[in-house]
Amino acid sequence: MAHFKIRREAEEVFFKHVVRTDGRPTAPLSTKFDLFYLCLMMGLQTRRTSSPGNAPGFIDYFVADYKAQEMTVVGLLLCAELERDGVSMDDRPEVKATLARFVGSAGLTDDGVTRLNEYASGGYDALVEQYGGVPYSWDEFLPWYVTEIGMTT
Image 1 (spheres, rainbow, N blue to C red):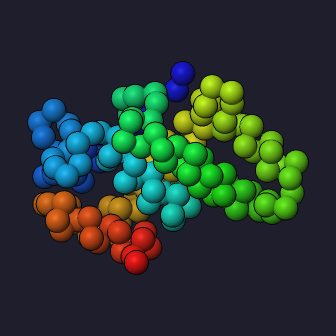
Image 2 (cartoon, one colour; image 1 turned 30 degrees about the vertical axis):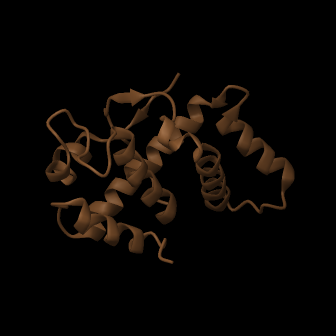
Image 3 (tube, rainbow, N blue to C red; image 1 turned 135 degrees about the vertical axis):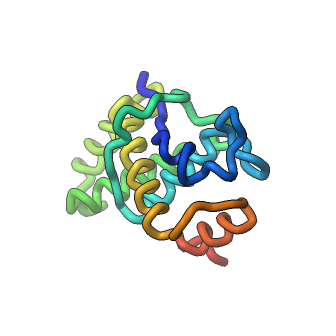
């Protein structure tokens, strides 16, 4: 089973002021998966991918706080990949084939996890470029992030 990965420099450089020594973020975030998810959403939003390199895997499932979003993430992945490949949502056989590549009877396939890791890595690249520094607090970073990925209400 493939594991979710977050690039070391995400934790050790970009988020270094808002993570504890054990690598977990400070409140209001609490898990490494939170950091992965922030990078992933930026990658999916910007349609950007890159290799996570030799980043170690840290978990092979969606943690409880994100379990309800798993199918939304799969949908976002499917949309991003179909757009990248120039496939219309009306092309049902191609949509089904792409979906089958990323999701199986037991949930995400290894290909699905690998592709999400690539979007998370690309999202990290986008964060570094667009933020213009490193966050020193979540109070400073999260409002910028929400606006940047277009989640404003």
